[in-house]
Structure formats: structure tokens, C-alpha cells
Image (cartoon, rainbow, N blue to C red):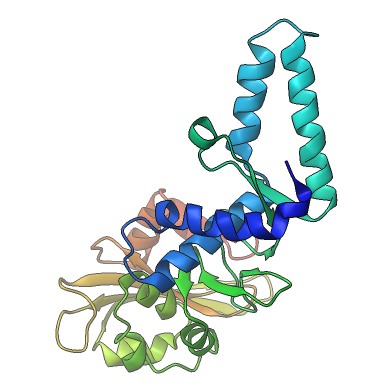
Length: 268
């Protein structure tokens, strides 16, 4: 490992890993973002490489032999790289035997380990490169800015061509405006009481197909307020007649058990 070549190695890693990470993406911009995401993952530590080094060079041999000393030397270099603010990527070490050193970016992820942030870029390097993601879905900066502002009209959200981007953008639009825009029909409503006596509404809507709808078949959504923040959410469910049935399906319980849950007590 040659720490002096870190900057060059980062550029090499970018181009070498981009094609694999981008998959079938043809656009140069898509490959660049996919490569950046792959490098950002590696900058945390290429866990596959660590794993195989340990398994094949250490665990399969008697302790104290040349393989152990080899592993110790490799891990020492990894430690030096981390102390220098670098991550590492052994993208195809079985073939080319190269370990790329990459500058470690700041990375923000969600609970599912997906690149995500609606406050700042999910990946950014000190040299200024930034990549924007919502729940693992890449967004160009200008579109990301419009989406997370919460003021993007639903008519514009529904015009987003990329279905993954459109799905994420719908989370940040005004739920009431969306329901009006798609001519949704309320099927059921139920209220629950929080410990302070205030109510939490839960509503079930049927959303038809049509020129204003993003769906090719009738869809069903529950709309509810977060009991702690009062922020309104909507979540797709299977075809149901009541709120209790819909949320029981969503949380894999029974309607009776869901009805018995209390907001902020036994229901988060």
C-alpha cells in the first residue's frame, strides 16, 4: 500500500469501480455517481477484503506462521491508512492484486444503511464533491433541493420520470394536496387518544387510476399523523375496508390488537 499515491488511487478507484457500481446505467453522470457511492462505501473499510484476509490467511492455518505475519503487516497498513484519513477498496484483488486508497468522505445513512439525508448531501468530500441521496436513491442537487423543501407541487412531483426518485419525492410533498390532486376517496377514519388527551387521526383512502394518478391500478393508502411530531404520513397498504384492517396488515397483527395499541404508550 502506497499512501503517497492516495490521490491518484482515488481517481483510479473511481473509474475502475464505476462501471460495476453503475450496473446498466449508460449516462456518464450516473456512472460517476455510482462510482462515488462505491468509493464512499469503501472509505469506511472494504469489509469483504478484511474478511477474506482473515479467513484465508489466518483461520485456515496454524497460528504463528508466515501467514499470520502477513496478515499483521496488512492490517498495520490499513491502520496507517485510517489514521491518515483514508479508506481502502480492493475491488478485484483476486485478479489485479491492487488495493486502492481513497480519501474518506463524510457519509450520512439511515437505519437501513442506505445513503440518506434531507438536510445536507449524504456523501461529501473536502474537495467539494457532494452526492445527494434519499433512502438510497440518488438525486441531482437541484431536484433534491426542491423535494426536501416540502414546497414542491405534487403536480411537479408526479412528473419526475425516475420512478424511484418520484416515490421518494412523494414523501416530502403535502399529503392533502396529493390526495386532492389524484381525486382520492376516503373509505374510513379512526381516532386514537394520546396520553395528554389529544387525538391522532388515521384515515384510509382509495386512489383511482386516471390522468392525475401515478398508479396503473386502484391503490390504497393509510394517512396518519406521527403522534410525537404531528407530521402527516401516508403508507401504501393492501385492499382493505377499514383503517384497523389496513394497519393490522401493515404491522402484521390483528385489527383488534392494533385497536388496543395506544399512541406514545404501546404504539410508537
